Image (tube, rainbow, N blue to C red; front, side):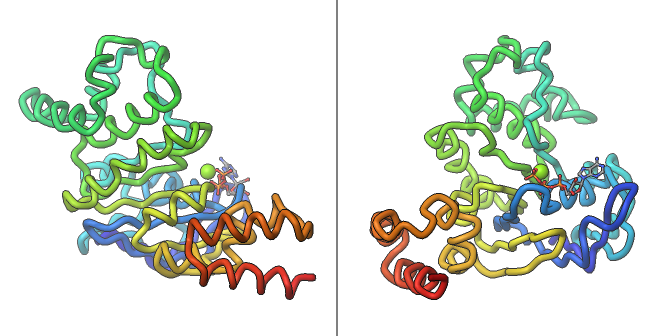
Length: 271
Ligand SMILES: Nc1ncnc2c1ncn2[C@@H]1O[C@H](COP(=O)(O)OP(=O)(O)OP(=O)(O)O)[C@@H](O)[C@H]1O
Ligand SMILES: [Mg+2]
């Protein structure tokens, strides 16, 4: 288990994250959702030891990793798929993947490559293409596949849906259950609450560096506050009763009656 206890961290100024508790179990997906600037990427950077933990602990399978440095984190079986993909545009797809297999023998790297290409067949035909020539969705696949080349026990993903068309996002999210079924623990960070919560076993809401809500993905998906503030509903429909009625039907078909009723109650009390 990747265990984060009472974690506080930040940059040069005041603390950004406050007393975060989070457990990522092997074979499960935990989503962290939250608005712009809530501290989601800071959480990943702290786990990856790219920035310092000020207090609290990070451990993996009982081994302390607090401020252990990025190399120690990676060799403990934790890979990060960074925000904005960060593939090397002027290198080929194959070369990018090879970087992910850093410090392994050629034979093992070849085995891992085969597995990664099985998961992302779109990359197979593009191995000799420059990464910069790929579409945004293919670059995201490459970034994930590169993370998989380290054969991590835990995969940390920062906003994989960012800037991608919904259909492409769906293709990428469809592979996540394959990874958890194989025993991997995934920490998925997303501003796109809808899609993240729909695949999450457990989830937390991060607000201004604090965990303010936790539950299963389904529980948060049905939480009125989450619906209104993080699933884009409250913002887009405002107080217009016609728009609310349309949205209510959409939510009903997407999530079931219970949610829709809660949604109506929330809006009634807001009026
Ligand atoms: N390199 C940095 N130096 C100083 N402060 C930073 C740095 N990166 C982020 N911050 C600050 O830390 C806070 C949290 O930022 P963070 O990038 O973790 O948010 P986020 O939840 O990932 O947001 P987004 O959804 O926009 O990616 C913000 O107030 C931000 O200004
Ligand atoms: Mg971020």
